[in-house]
Length: 116
Length: 111
View 1 (cartoon, rainbow over the protein chains, first blue to last red):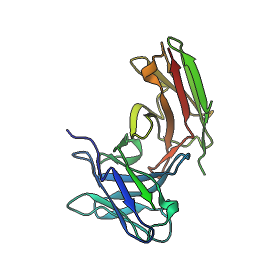
View 2 (cartoon, rainbow over the protein chains, first blue to last red; view 1 turned 30 degrees about the vertical axis):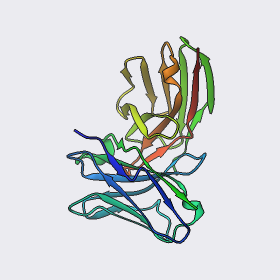
View 3 (tube, rainbow over the protein chains, first blue to last red; view 1 turned 45 degrees about the vertical axis):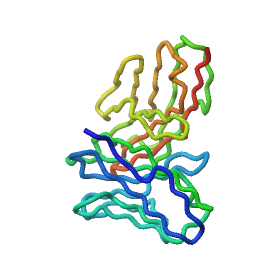
């Protein structure tokens, strides 16, 4: 049973370009969470999704950031018109269906975004 | 708003020592608490999960305790090894299902 998969592992973009980060949850998991770790800072929650639904996006910046988790395929975190301040490690986690708040979250290896 | 603090921020111990890492949280209305390990430039490895109804969990040389009413958790590492060197993070899950992370403790175990 493969763990949470994220790709790419490293992504370099120039200012103004778009970044697309992908996350495939563990088999059987239907909840996906995205977190961001800025340099020398702790991990911060961004968004919580279930299949085809955004449950909580309270941690998402209001502009340029969006996330989706379609019925088929991986979850996508999309950052439009990237700026240098977007440079960070972006982690995805997944948990199984059921009573959400009791479930352990399993993390992927992260995508390290560098904006030049 | 939940805030999670970890003390100390950094710790260096000689191999073989037992050590305790501390985590405190401001809102006791949590569902569970997780301890993670993060190696430099790597992802997070889940070490232990304690549900709010539990007092402690053990895995090998690791033991985590939870005192929900006082907003505290400790991670005890027995007989530390150089391979234990990493950053240790605690995180709590509240009603919104999201994890709120602490600031981390950077541990170095020396030979």
